[in-house]
Length: 86
Image 1: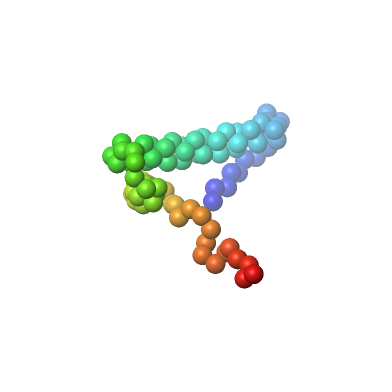
Image 2: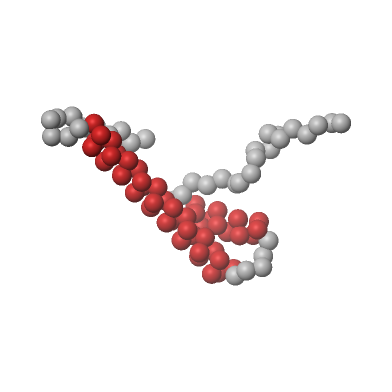
């Protein structure tokens, strides 16, 4: 977790400081998004079209982990969906 410390002076208002923090956050999200898209493109180039989604998912997960990104299986955790017994 990143903590930004900045002493407010007459030169910078709270709005300017919050804008700087939002820009840093936006840059971080953009870099993560670019890494994910690069992994997805690499999987598609390597495997091509026509395979089951689960094949792409396994390969994408491996590439993302190799790239240092945390990922988990999509969907609901087991036991989280309750079906009616009627």
